[in-house]
Amino acid sequence: MTFPYLDIIIRSVAVYFFMTIALRIFGKKELSQLNTADVILILLISNSVQNAMVGSDTSLTGGLIAALVLFVINFIIKKLTRKYKTLSNILLDKPEVLIHDGKLDFKALSRLDISDEELKEAMREHGIEFFKNVKLAMLEIDGTISIISEDQNQLKQTHYKRRHNRKNLQKF
Image 1 (cartoon, one colour):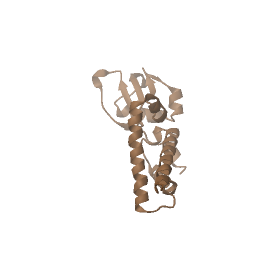
Image 2: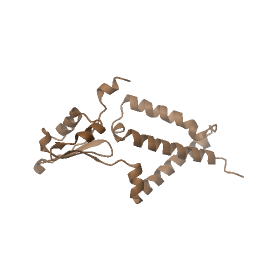
Image 3: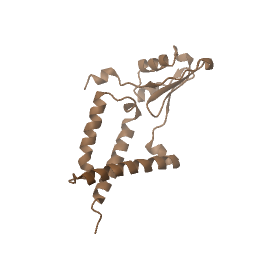
Image 4: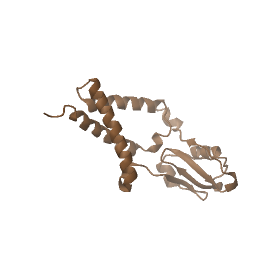
């Protein structure tokens, strides 16, 4: 006798890895601050992959098994990425240098689609007026921009979350 919910388990694992890869491709900046379009996208994605996970089984048990599989695989992936650096490098983003010793990394800023105004806003939130006063600015793995100023006496701790470019939002 075969386990009747094995199909749900296999489907849920496949959807989990598909979503992990999709989020890796589309980048951390997309998750740093959700707007209305992002919430709608997440809701639509969850609805679209539901049937891919449970198939024709619409029972409570089938749904709970799919949810349990997602929690378990997420727990396992977190443990494995902490233990194995190679897996961590594949699945997790790394912080990106945006400014080093007052010099902007234009290639990184362009690749990450971070505008001059976004960077200036983050600097203002950190109490820094000029690029030359930035010792280090990083786009962190959670989508925040952290900044260390040259003036070590005036270190401030702030939390800047990237916002999506307003021009891009008007397209939706």
